[in-house]
Length: 356
Image 1: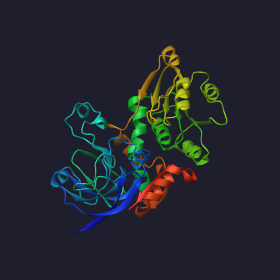
Image 2: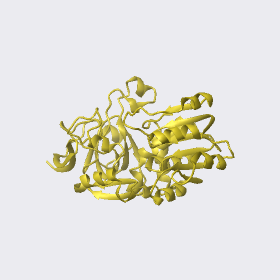
Image 3: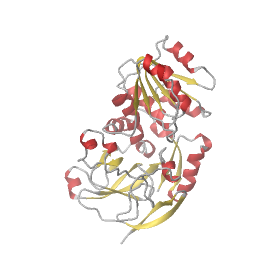
Image 4: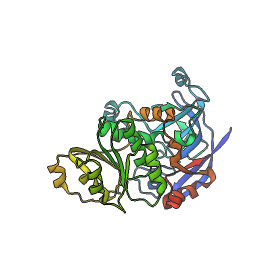
């Protein structure tokens, strides 16, 4: 039987190369030959042992693109074939629970997600993309990737799906509304793209960064103004840009207490604040009187549900050079180095990827 290799997170911070049998596929399933996988902003949480849902040993990785290597008959009847280039959403949908039946499958009661919650202890083992192959269960959502799209752009499908959700689904951004994105990292940059596609104006990105490349990408992706909080008073600057109206929608992507408080101040009366950043369950202080007196709608944003379809259409259009967000690529054998590089923020990384 043929073998394949994957990097296995045996326990927190202990990740080694393992060899597995290449599995046959059950009905409804497929096997993906991984071309590239991005290190998600959540992967360090599993790597460091801070996710209570993780069952070790684990193969990390869910921001991936690859080609179908093996496929069951039912998927062939749906029009898929060996060799097709696809991206797979992180969540495996049971299709039966309350959340799946109400279009919120990221909260599926089975809590099965590639590279996050499924141990590789039992066959078919390969439920993460830090490896040569990834096993794809029935209930997974597949998206076709055009051949001309760089791997570095294709593996960002679920990331851009986040931005689409925060802007379109939760923020309900209308044409001509002002949008402020707090945080020029990967999540903020994809949110700018989603805001541009929604017809928002002006699109303003603010935050603190020592990496000018992030500001450059923000402008290239559609930001009309950038406001560096370390150099300017953000509320004053944004008030001037919007002629005192402030923003109809603010999306906060950092999880920092000061930035969430800033988000409250940047919303106009009756505005919407989408909180997408996390802070490790810290109890953060907010001026709730501003939420009350401005009658703000404060919305939490987690994952994607029916948002990645739009994201993939944007990626396949090649309208934006999304691949520029992947600033470093490491070989599979250096997955530990890649993770440490990403976590330490060396070189001003935006997204780091692993190529099997």
